[in-house]
Image 1 (cartoon, rainbow, N blue to C red):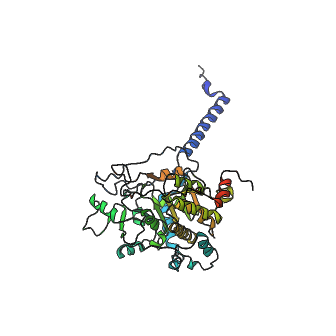
Image 2: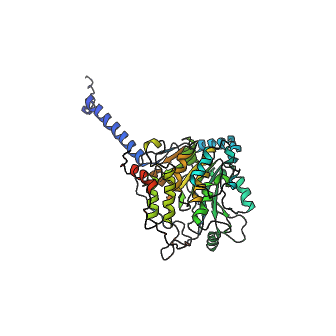
Image 3: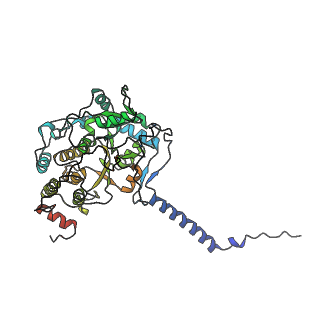
Length: 447
C-alpha cells in the first residue's frame, strides 16, 4: 500500500501571501519603533540598579510633594540616549582625574577692580580686547558668607557637584531620584539656605539644633549668613547658580537645579549624555514658549516678574544699542535665544566659566532675570561657548516641577509685597534703539 504524499497547507503555498505577511509584520515593527522613539525622550542602552530605599524620610507636615505641576507634552523631537551606567561612571571618573585644575583658577584675579558702574558695552569691550584672561572680572560683587568647615568641604568636592539654593523659605527640599548605586560616592549634593529657610527646616524637625553634620538625605545643607546679602532673595540664588566654579574650585562638572524641581535622573548619566557626549561647555533647556529675548522681556513686564519696568526697558535698549539681534538662522547652532534656566549642566572649562562670570555681572548690574542677558552674553563672547540647548520635552522628563511654597491666603510664603513700578507714561516699553530688533523679530524689516 503506497504512502500518502504530504502536501503543505494551502496557506503556505502562495509566495505572494507569504511576502505580504512579511512586509506587513516589518512595517508594523518599524511603525511601533518610530512611535516609541517619538514619545520616549530618555532612552537607556542598558538598565542599571537605582537606589531603592528612600534617601530621607520626611514628616508628613513638611509636604515635600505638594503643588506638583503636571506636564502635557507627549512627543519628543530629539530623544536623549544614555550609555551603560557602569561605563558612564568610569568615563566621568577618568575625565575628572585627567582634567587640570590650573585653568579653572584663572578667574581669581582682579574682579574686585571691576564694579557694577560700567555699562554692558564697557564690560564686553574690556573682555574682547584683553589677551590676558587672568584679568577677566568675575564676582563676588557681594560677600557670600559661609563657615570655614563648609568651605573646606566644598573645596574637597573634586568631581561632579549638584547645587541648589532656597532663600526666604521659598521652596521645599526634595530628594533626587533614580540614582545609581555608586553615585552618592562620587557626586556632591549641596543646598544653600539662608537663616529664614534654616529656621523653617528646624521647625519641621528636619535639622537638629545639636547636629554638627547638617544634611537632609543626599543634600548637605550650607547656611549662608543673612548679613551682607542682596536684598532680593533671587539675586542671592544667582551666586551659587552662576559662580559655582568659584564656590567649588576643584569640581570638574556641575548641575544647577532650582529648588522647585526634583531631579529624576542620575546626574552622572545627565552629564555624560548632555555635556560630554555633545562636547558641550553648557547644556540648558530651551524655553517652552519664547525664542527671542524681547519676547521674554515683554512677558517679564506684562506678568510682573520684575517690579521696575523702566529698568527693564533701559536694559533692553542698552542691549539693542550694542548689537543684540533677534534669533535667526545665522545664530545656528544656537537654536534659541531664551533658555529655561531652572536646570543648567556645565563642564568647568575656560568658555563655560567665562560665560558664567560675564552673565553674573550682567545680572548684578541689571536684575536677576537671567533669560534676558543670556543671548547678549553668549553672542558677544570670544571665543563663543558651545551650548547644547535641549528640548523642553527632555527637561520635563529629567525633573518634576513644583510650585513655590504658598501661604494659606494664596501668596508666596515669605515674599515681600512690592508694587510694580510701571514704565513712564511718555514712553513705550521699548524705544528707538530696539525698533529695528522688533521689526526683524516680526518679519517686517525693510533693510
